[in-house]
Length: 561
Image (cartoon, rainbow, N blue to C red; front, side):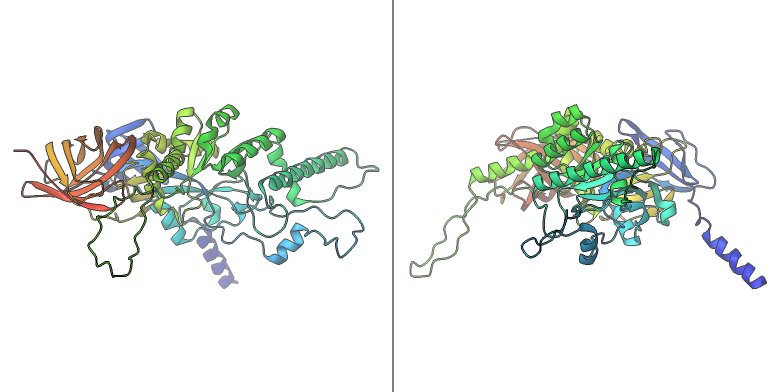
């Protein structure tokens, strides 16, 4: 009996909370408490899983682990608006599909004796992500390296895929990591398996029938419960019953729609059944920004971006050859008109988030479709450097998803008493050099080494005018005049050249004798982006630049005598 008591006590002790979050203070960092408030050099203190204080004059507790934040950028923990992480394989097996989806009979071989059962292909609203999610250690690491502390998970590849859940990447068990569930009903225009429906119109008809069936069953159930005498008992149908909260508008419908046609059809179906719609994916949402604004429909934008078209290279001069030699294969350069059309379409898609922001449509970001979340910061950098304001990108990572998932009182900002969800980057949002240094999820600390070795404090001052040349560029010889201003590690300025109109230097950083910056300018009427890396040696600078053609070119620069 005594041994049994000891076992029970040990089991109870093991079931208690794991070791609590540490007390940590980050001092001297640039702190963004929200998208509109910045503390240039402040301190944030985290204790017991909550923010204890944040400000320019916050004191350091004697028991706190102190992190030197100089050169670091502190943000509210980022929220991933859409993922399937931790759900494993959610697709039904062929046997489960045959049982659940009521495969239609072959009327060419047999005569039906009655109405066939309802077709439930891709219809699984009873699935609950909150009951299945289990983030592995490797998944949590990748979520953190994308800058995220919280992730919204839901099943994919179903016309109605069940309810989603907002989950903290705090490394704890399910009962400690699920922040809110259900968050809404997941949907899509795509599923797996053969047979009807297989087109957008077929899916719409399929969904409309399911919604009508769910509404009818609810009416039958209400009538039966009011007076069951002489009334047939309505059937039990978990799939249709799971749709009642959606029809009652107590949860939203997260419908994946990417093309303008899909978004238009989803809006019409939501209007017909009076559903609270959220568009996910939204690749062409910018084309319907006005209608989305009028309908009050937010968008969860997928960060899977198409590759940027490469500018056609100038054809190489013909080589001298013996006319008796066999003909050589020569790559036909892409016509300039084709490149311009491809670039115009690419810019339209990349600027979709900017269009939504300008039109006042709420939006956040999703990593669904990416190989993993670690590339999220690079994708956001592309959006920022093609027009999206950094503060709009920050809002889409923090406050906007917090409101969308009805957790605005908990997540999305840094303030005393709020959960300690914090993302610490090595460079500001929008910089291609931004990497995750620390993540705090519910106060639990996760540290990650920078992907690039820190160069240390600046040992050079690049302030002044520089003449830069690059002779091997596919655009011809590059001659650029840079006027730079350096303040500490930050580098900014302007650029002029015969090839382009005046450009702007942004996201410049100096460490040791090395530096990097972006140069944005207009080339032949279109915005182009050059990424420079270099170092100073004996009063001159040299390095490499990645430009519109996508090729790395060496350059040198010096100050005019």
